[in-house]
Image (cartoon, rainbow, N blue to C red; front, side, top):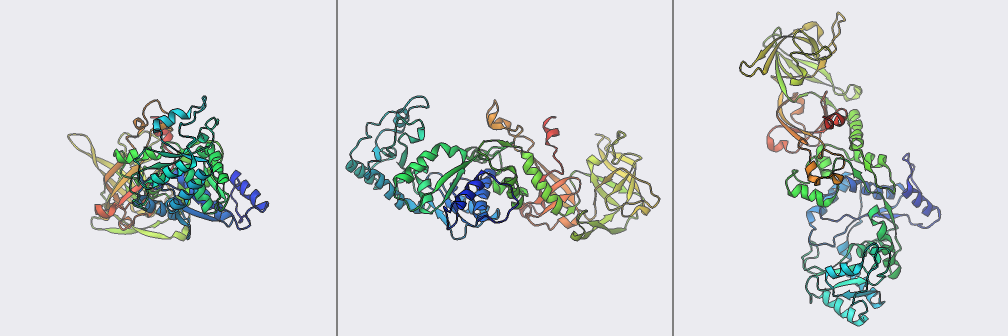
Length: 560
């Protein structure tokens, strides 16, 4: 029975509801999320996580977390730990159902023996290249291996010898005996075991043969009594093989595979191989670099688990591959933080302002709202003094008429403070750079309103020079300069955006931001949404990552 939900339906929901209506699973549905521990999870995996755990929760079923760890050359416990952390951070719990394909090595070996004894598997002694040649093509049928009709007894002896370490890597493989004439290449006697004299991160040197993915996945599902094996669309052609193994072996349960379109997100790459290359070649600063589409990177950037789950629900579930505009993900977090993030002031590119008619030794605390639309979030005190800093971009010496910020002779409002007027511009005599502005303020406008009713069109943010705190701010943008780097005419790395990170070292924030803890999120007024980074502990001052701007400005940036 489905729990009450306002979310839209999709074809997987319809399949599950039809199965339940027919009484097929009286004990409830059972799904699983089966990552390979050879890298960090990315936003595409988040879609699969939300689907598998989400469907189990929605229909009061169960979902396993199972690591498909059958390739010892690339797997590591650090990836297991990172994946577990990511799944939990997204808000999902596998309870006591944490499994590893390596838990089933002995049982999978028995299944292979069962196939050999039935005459449905054989040991092939051809090289990998010969196997590829004999396999045929999409337009040409395959050819039988000269070893295809080995007697069962010989196959059993050789397979036990493979297990016992009597042969070297590549000397033999075990293949399922299906149909070398099949239209589906996956059914042309696929390899199901190969020799790998590599130590496994969990089983050590107990095994020197390892099962292939297609053989492992379906049988692991059956051993765990999975009912709905949900996987991405590239495995659709593998489904006949999935069913063949299940139908030809005595398994404790009969799972069924269903495919959905994987997530393709614009302005990034989601190939694990390419993500590894970005990390190992130094294009990014590790798997959790905030520019990466990994879950750990998104978390460090400042995305919330709620925003990622919401994004996965919004994009829906289809049977056709499509590319999702990166702006959809940015819009989701912008909506969430717009409602929840407390407001603060920070100046990224400081320009000094001296208020000449403000008393030299005076300072005051001004009331500032933590959120303009949510009085329940309360207020804070912001210190003000004679010398302040504003954004350099908020001043223009030769300003056009529609420039509503500070300029010589013009009056603007300082957020929460006073009206000020620029009277003098101090420049570097050699370079002409503006060093300082000399201004005057109207004491009657405290709080940002004029008692005589006069209006100003510009309101700018600021930080008191005496009370401001130093900070490093990292302006992250999209990692690639084109929407689909995989589809470009050049190598995909040629499209890496050189402006994907700008680090500003001499920023100032209001004092309330100095003790910000890693993961805390704020809206810096007029600038965007920012998240405190863990690097602040090492830097000795806060470090903030920009999550998103206040509005989508990428179209303007990319068309420059």
